[in-house]
Image 1: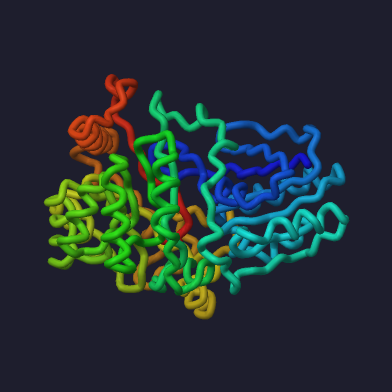
Image 2 (image 1 turned 120 degrees about the vertical axis):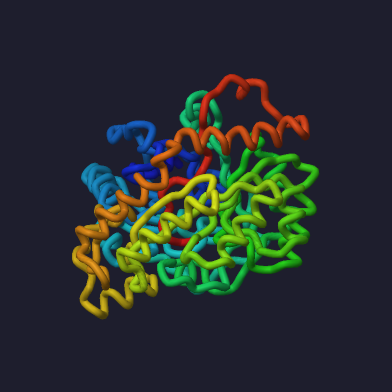
Length: 424
């Protein structure tokens, strides 16, 4: 069976250097497909879709809200030819009812152990409109090694360097943060993969640099210690979301190759200042993820926050505005209060103000977002800060003899995240 799996194009943050990481959701999904399925993966961010190609079945994998309208357009083009389309991925789960109007089926939840039945239904011309497993996560032992073989690897080079590969060691998140949809998508229970399986997958990836995309590594201290201890012999260099703020955890993370972390900076407290310092003391870089426009943010607070970010020596910063994605606490609250100004999902890019802030006009918050980017990178450009972070990983690799000669003469690079939905 010829199955075309498509990842719709989407715009990057307006001020962010554009690069493309090999997507994680599609390759994890592909690992759950039956053996008889011949899958072709198309990342529309990097290649065109051949709408006339011979294909039996089309899957559209969408991570971000800003992908959904394009995904619906793609589905319409194939369905006009009589080809059935199934939607899946994070954004499908957040926009399930709308996606049902544009496809033959939607798949909600995690795919392991479920796709044999879906493809059997397709073969009998009996696809169900909805396959809903959101409240029925599979046994975590079923999670296998992602199908990175479906990727066209050469497309994910940035100025000659292979981008980080994405991998995950756990699912679910015990936290329930205000702007985040993870509690709806993956549940509040932390579900770690067997460490030996996660380590085996990392070891098999032909790339020294990884992005561990778990929602947060700071969920179970003993698990973190055990994971990092097993990662040390791999000599991989990796970035991740927050690491637990304990000396023994940070020490093992550094030994395991921690390169840098994405750390939310939500206030100007001494705790945040010391948190960043502790990362740096362990040789771990920090990219601050800065969310502007919460109800306790007035103009003075935002300006003081920017001054604070410069003072604590963040390696990089990424600025976004609060965006009320469906199935988040932010959405429920702002929708109930009548403060959401538009439901045009193409504007839910995290750099456009789509709601009424509490202490200023939407236009003023938009101006302050620009002010944040301009101020933080005024004295040292984003490319220069990226170069410093890249130099850091080169030194780490040279120290443990894992440096790859083909990287030697390259300029500044950045292996950070793309504009991910607020799910971490």
